[in-house]
Length: 126
Image 1 (cartoon, rainbow, N blue to C red):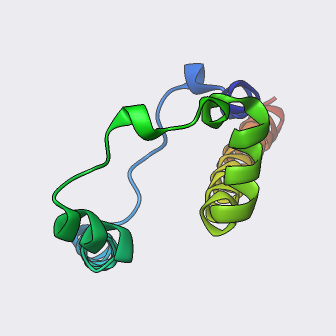
Image 2: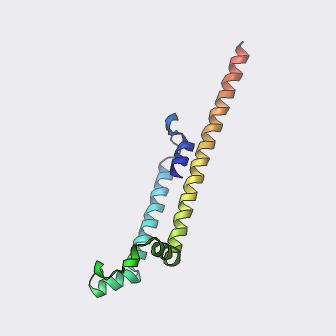
């Protein structure tokens, strides 16, 4: 999937021109700081973190059952106990792919428009 997106972007053509300025960068930094703060707050107030702090640490690895490392146990754990995290990750990947496709289409359409304008100038000179 990632390879397909990288091929779609075609990074050999060079970098995109800089768009946006200091205001957009400051806004993006503010949003990133806000999201990081919310994530840190959520993790620090998590019941699991508080439970480990009260009990004195993470339980020993010897207490983990043998079936815990199987693919079936992993699937059950992922889709039953961590479904929200799984869905948020899939949405982030989808947004990244849509962004890559959008950038590719914009680059191709601007290149096509510049090529058409150059061809028009050449035929007008002849």
